[in-house]
Figure: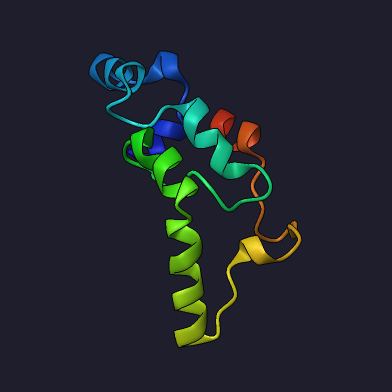
Amino acid sequence: FHAWAHGNPRRLPPGVGAMQRAGVLVSRAQHGAHHRAPYDNNYCIVSGMWNATLDRHRVFEAMEMVVFLRTGVRPRSWDEPDAAWTEDYDETAAVAG
């Protein structure tokens, strides 16, 4: 599902494109928001329908805090973007498509 969100819509299987347009599967445009600063939202990679609710209630922010408190590993979204891990969504989509 995640790879399809990076793919060129014209090259996707017809059923996948239809499910993306219907909102059943996350579309390239919906998923693209996850690859833009501040990199702390739109984590749902199967169906984007829950992103607004989960972001509004800070579900992933809470999960990041739990992981940090248990492991000491800081989420990337807490720091300034670094060229070593950021992804230019347009270039990635072009390569995947």
